[in-house]
Length: 251
Image 1: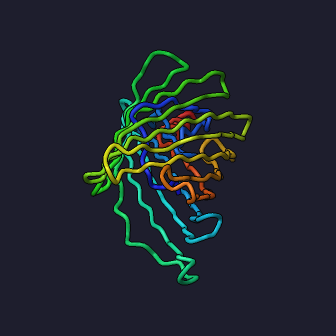
Image 2 (image 1 turned 180 degrees about the vertical axis):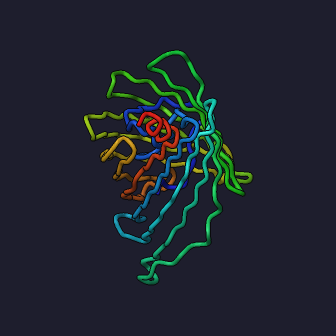
Image 3 (image 1 turned 90 degrees about the horizontal axis):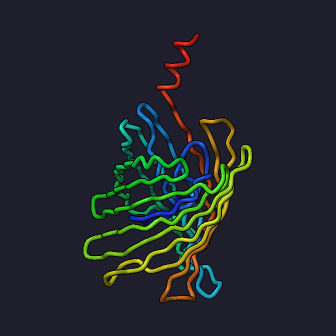
């Protein structure tokens, strides 16, 4: 799963990720909203561990599902849900289901810049006990090569931090590849403070369906002995009712 951390208020997004404009793979969000009557389902599974001086102290399995719906006029809404199982390797070998996480709601807006290579978007995402604000700016260097920087604010009660993603991606035929750095810097005591990297790619079986896989690792700024590697796999599936109706009319 996309490690349910939160990302962006300003972003420089390498969006050769795919024609689906999926938020997968990686941690960056797309600045482009879905069109009216489009639905995009994003599903991810993540397998990770916590290493202390190369000794595995914890293993975890996560999944998430997010459904994005185009509202028209550059607006989009989304609803997501995820869960997590943790195995404390020091005490046992069993994975224990963690308390159910609250669903999250998302609202995204794409601003038309009238510049073909530039894309600007804004996003708000919230669970019951936290909220994030994100801005997303992408630039397409070439038709298949793009670059990004995400930045935003995440608030969880009294804990506040700023987060970012820097993403570069390249698409070739049905394949797309990316590398990415991301992290957070705390503004108040208790806020997140880490650095992380990931890389991977996707394969498009059709214009409406792709599968993704990527790997990465995270390290905390004030505890350099702890590393959290992970591997993430999933898919994105676009359902375009508007296009289907147009095709039926042309029959």
